[in-house]
Length: 112
Length: 116
Image (tube, rainbow over all chains, first blue to last red; front, side, top):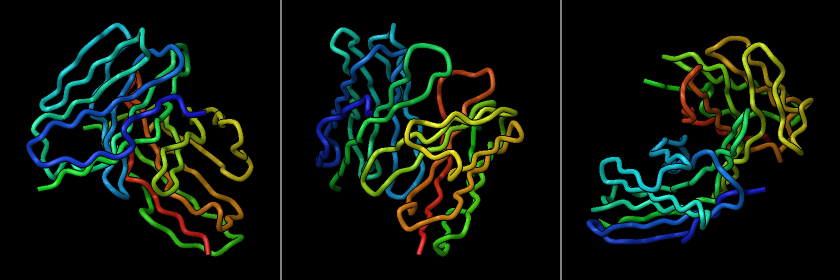
């Protein structure tokens, strides 16, 4: 079954605005990762946050993790038209032979 | 670095035939590779985990006799869809994890399979 659930499912913003996407999950995790997928293409790894971390930055990306609420957020600041894509959170369970479980994804449209 | 390729990028085949998809890690060794399928506007569903030199571990509901996975080397894994049917039409994506590396997975560009 799906572990991560993102919201909103679709987001449309103006270029220059910030985009915030949320992800909730159900069980204990080792880490949570965010990926981007352009239409019909493979996934690009954006950022990984470990279960003992609360916030992480990478360029215009800021990820937070609240393990007590089992939720994460991805903030893209000063969005650009090129940020238009689908964004997925993926959880990596605690334990050996870890594997990723993806959420349903968020479709972000950035209007120029 | 950490580039994963897939071949072919798209394939059309007739119902009943078999199709092989290759996944290669180009500049790193991957002890573990993963195979996913993705239907239009949906998420990725893990099909199987492939470890070099051993049998793949399939997810519940995935037929191992239909989706044959071979991970013969540290840089190559193959997925063969046997006796393909139209319902097997999908986007198949592989990923690889660095040998001895962290938890990140590096994804291939995907293979679009259409079964007519």
